[in-house]
Amino acid sequence: VVEFVKVHKPKFKKLQEYALIFIVYTVFCRQFQNDDDGVGNQVEVGDIFIMIALQFVLLCSFMVLAWHSLKLIFHNEPKLRVMGLFGCTHKTVAMGVPLINAIYEDNPNVGLYTLPLLVWHPMQLVIGSAIAPKLAEFVKREEERLGIAVEGDE
Image (cartoon, rainbow, N blue to C red; front, side, top):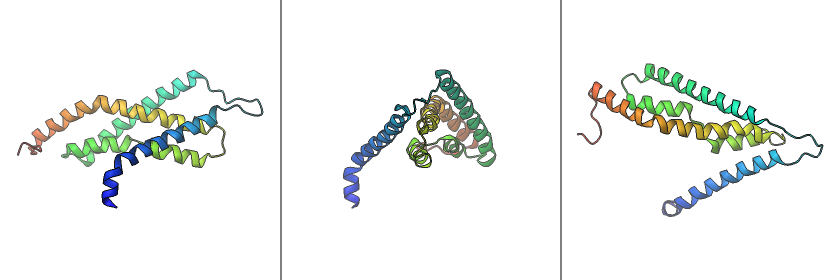
């Protein structure tokens, strides 16, 4: 069994990605299909941009709060502080979309309920990628300050 998993792991990973894409696709298809009663689920474009801006503010606020809270917990452990920053604020689409779909299965607005999560996920990737170099410098600087041996320098 272990050998089978090792050989086919990339295929399972791709299958998992395709399943997630299918779930997201079906959720949005249900959201944007025509209603029988003629009442559409209208969402203004401005509302979506307001939601994106609010999520950006929330994500940045949570990251700042997590960073300062983790300073209290991991004062002399910079790697754990950085890891905690991402662990505290990162949410996964793979778990969130099926959960939202299961909770609001018969609700015609389920696509709207998943939209914030589908915006949050790429936003956290972009912000995380933008701050990663600065966090790497922080870890290096703090380890030097604390006299912690850096892996590979021993």
